[in-house]
Length: 493
Image (tube, rainbow, N blue to C red):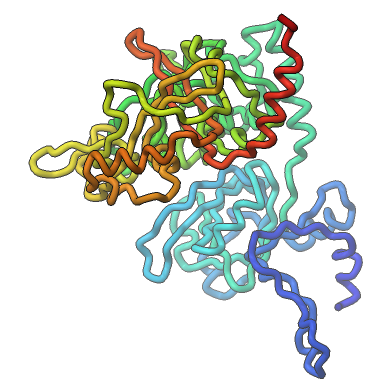
């Protein structure tokens, strides 16, 4: 190793992607010296610098002196090499591309010291680099690839990650952001107008990623992003496609509710597609939402791939269901008296409700898992508001659960119902069986111990009970011990 780099690399922190490391051979052959320890290719790793470190600060000053506005077409054509330093303004969502030899494109927008903008374009496997950085981080780009079209768009330099390119990252000081958001949360308790004094970036937006407390649905801040909301779905609008950016975009509206109020969330594109699988009554966690207020003063809450919005279905989280340290179990008697909520219980499948059809199969849209109907001799999905070409059979069933405190009739949909079959048959095969043969298969399920996540919700003044997640092989001995401990703490008669 060149001695000039020894101090620079000493105790240096690197962020790497989940790619395979390159290591030295373990065999003791004469060719070992040909396979020394190697660093990953630079598009899979980022060295971390610190603005407070004197050596790092000197390195940045000497090696990254260029500004975006200084880049000229003549210099690019003559082979002048540039190195830039700036702040990450935004990281776009990956998107497919029609360029020959390329599949995926992702853009990082950067602002330099003079507030000129540049775009670093990543292709295909290079896009994993964005998992190592976030908005407001500072980034140093050494020798990006600049084509003749790099300065074609006025005011925005186009850069690519070339074979000679190397990136250094200076992460934003998270502790300062946490302190600012904690102070904001403290003031919000005593002042409902505190949102007017929020710290904002150059685009007039506030980053609430580190806001430490749940937000009040009735008093959400405007012009903010990285918002997290937790609530129960009370209504889902079918797809209302809108033409935006010269292409049709899927759009779903979801209304959620918690103890602070009601919030309407508009979801776009891939986020809307993910939301199409949700059901009324699901407890959902929305991450990285954004808000804005229109000319009339109405506040909109949106989720989109551009904001990297995520939807977590808490009701179908198997990890919570199977972890006694997280989920608090309720009895059937308690659940049967509820009108809404998410409950966990350990019970036995005791049978089916009398005088009811306790199982059914239907054709569903593969993407959203909602039933389709025939319209103009073609399958039509009302949830997606479109004709579909990908369908398959889904299986629903109604069962009775019993835990000794009472019994409860519950609905199981699609994958949850299929899980109860325990691989006895496929859904397609099950749909083709006679009613008697179906009954024989389902009769084998009676007596099965299950651990359930039960959603209770009310529609049109009718209370419904739906099993959204189920563990058909719970730790029965632990459950018996848990029930025994509960019985021991019951008051004596």
